[in-house]
Image (cartoon, rainbow, N blue to C red):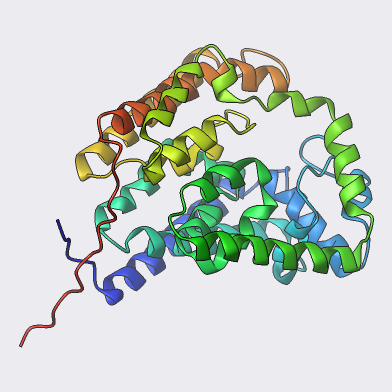
Length: 330
């Protein structure tokens, strides 16, 4: 079935509206916080370090940070943030989220407007509260020329690459990633070694778990039965990637719904899981590692399992629906 594509004008308006809304919400969340820009503080510091030709891992280790003074990102993350790194942390974070939201709104409306419901999900809320990369990277995954950006978060690069249906997308990711790595190496040649040592030695790295290797998430491996479908490969790839379970890393799962009804179900399930976490497990344990461990049953049950059911109800055949351009009235 061919679908009528939203007009370019409608998509641009949606991008502008959600850019303003998400930017304003992020600014409101960060107002009065002493944690600078929450998780975005680390890429922001990395951007400042690279603009001065300094090692970002040493720079972060000596800086005031909201959590542990450890940069888990590859150094290219600083290259992307560098254009706004001269701003205050909160201002840069607001712009970052506004740009990511605008790009995502424009990308998801390529086929239909109902996909904008992704902005009503609990993972989007968590992405704003923590100032995360998931909206921007999800937008990049839907627009292949920008796919090289996924290198900044290798743990979710696999599923975003697995969902691609063309070779040019994979090629764009490889070339874009290589360019970012080479430029960062020209500034700080030793950063790969420093990154490896940082990730290996940080105690909180144990918060990252692979869902299919956990009791709750093992069944998600059944998505392999629908391997021909890009959304199944996305689901399986994410389930096989190390991640924490604070909801924001799971935003790509909202590409699994293929109808308005399924998206509504996915959004409601995400909030049921999120509120369950808030009521029964939030701050039940001390420390990031134990918090992540306590939340993962809620994340898997409310995000992974609904996505798995949707995938398994489809055949293992895939034919991309190309939206029909709207015809201008005569």
